[in-house]
Length: 506
Image (tube, rainbow, N blue to C red):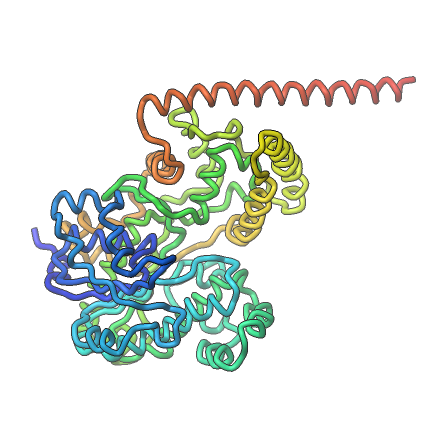
């Protein structure tokens, strides 16, 4: 059985940004395990005293690469770090390395970005918008370039609820070239002060600067074989190479983690709204398939996706299928149901979650569900000689819940027709090897594997009979304490009501 995608990557040289990030690592692993790429140049910046060679070498000890290295112990030798930094005016790439990339690279996958919703605008612009322009300029120097994949987000156009696989420059207050020109002229502080005016209807700097990044592709990538890949909310691995793996504590993963610990007990969310979750392995698979299809389109049309003949780049969105949607309520309930199978050993309270939609009601409820218990736990920490921290943790959690508000209070209809068409064009072997069919997702099964993965890889709880047994004993104690507290509060409330009733009757 033939594999067109594997044939496309055979002997190719790839330039990847964000290779040490969540999605980037999964892309590297998939390329090395499922294709015969010649080389992967991974743009990496020194970090916390570690050289780029040391950062890439750490992949050898990452459980994500365990299966790969058993099959091919020398696989990571094909990953070559390139010094670079998206914050630098020229991406921090040396003249010699730029010449090397220009001469050798066939495929570019631009994954690097800041995903913080509350990132300062000047930083978000540099990382998500200006770096996109600099990557496009570098790609134009690559004499063998066959495909360029710009990784964006399905929520880059969240100012509308029905998001088609097209670009929406009309929703930007200023075009990307004008905003970048302003950025060059003004200080970081002045740019940050302009945040409300520039963002307009965009809820945060992340979605705004990702929309600007797409505008950069539209305006400046003319002549390149380029496409835009928009994954929805990226969550732990579903299928391969390590079921449930994650090293990322963002978005829903962080909320599930906190709920499983019994730390978060109240959420501000519409339980009937749809949540756009996509496993990170599916994201990596579609990104690689997009690169293949972009090259195919360039050859069939005699031009690139953006148009050596003109036109917009093709946009591919990965999101839950309309035939297989999942609500926030189901997501929370299934995640909580796992507490009776493999609870976390570091729980601080019995895991429960109550949901409200009104932010005002959430603020009131959070005082009793979170802040008040937080002060009590901090008092216990002080008495035991440890540093109090729970109230500060809750303030950060409430800030994150507020930032997620625009996405947890309504449903987004995310068009995936191009992605569906891409799957139809893939061979049977490619659909199996590079799987990303969201219509076939078994959400109940996925949530259980994802929560187990969070327990193992983020909570660092070993999945052994002894660990699970110990956690179940803790769960039993916490459940008794929880029910005792509920009964006490009910009795107290009853006593107060009875006293009031007697006063009224007298």
